[in-house]
Amino acid sequence: MAVERFPVEASHILMFARSIGDSNPIYADQAHAEATEVGSIIAPPTFAQASAQFDPDYFLRPKDGQKWFGSGATASGTLIKETAESPKGDDKKSGSSAGGLHAEQHFTYHRHLKPGDVLSAETKPGESWEKESKRAGVLKFNESITEYRDQDGELVVTARSVGVVTEKVIEQ
Amino acid sequence: MGLNSNDLTIGDSYSEVIVDDLTRTQIVQYAGASGDYNPVHSDEKFVTEVAGYPTVFAHGMLTMGMTGRMLTNYVGDGRLTYYGVRFVNQVWPGDTLTARAEVAAVREEDGGTVVDLTISTTNQDEKFVLTGNATARLD
Image 1 (cartoon, rainbow over the protein chains, first blue to last red):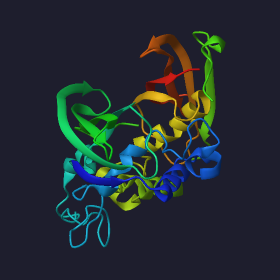
Image 2: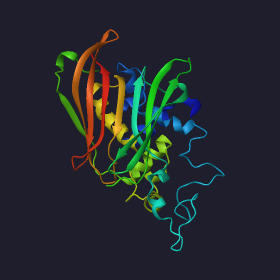
Image 3: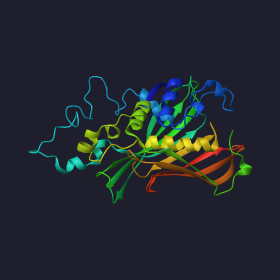
Image 4: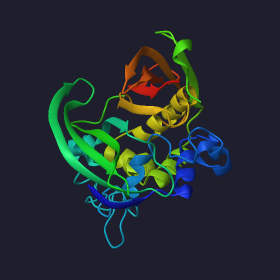
């Protein structure tokens, strides 16, 4: 993933804070924020993840003119419809059809994001490893490191993400 | 305002209920704000018939975001220097989650004093859904 331009905007911070149920005025009220030691509205600690909105190739967002793997007329727009005559059998039980799950996320803050910042993000692959799990079979882990830089080229947030693809649906 | 190092003892803890009866609508709200529209989080037909799960489940990042609210309420705004988690169990609609931070260490870093916190978030069955660590600047 490479994001060339991630403008951090007050309305986006407000919507993001609402979505995580956080009514802290530091995310919404400029007058309040100015009177605090922080001095301005800032973004919640996990906001950098919303850079996905500005990644043109982000695969978990439907795109104009492309088939989407979620449901419409059928259960998935990109899988062949299963019928009683040709069941997909165990394929259906592969957790990988969900495109993998998020296993870990880490943020190191060099400073906190604020409206007016214009970030860029560069992602590099990290380690890969496998683990055996009782509840989901073989787990394949993939790490990636994303560096978020501001309009002056300063490193502001470093993110380390670990994704996992499970062999089977996780037993509940 | 941050926490004061003189007021902290190893083992001190702080907790909050971060969501009571998680709704599918909040999960959709998070999808819209974050840009992560993976249908496993909002599309009942896809998640049950294709992915094979009993119903939609929350983004790990929604749980991390809600747990972050507990953290910033505890350590103060703009104080975190590190926040990292593992997603150890899925979070489902109807879940009620409690997030907890415990003081693991108070130490010097880059000329200031910081606190290391051990974090966990549990559901109504006292099952861990998230575990992690954070570091924050102190006064």
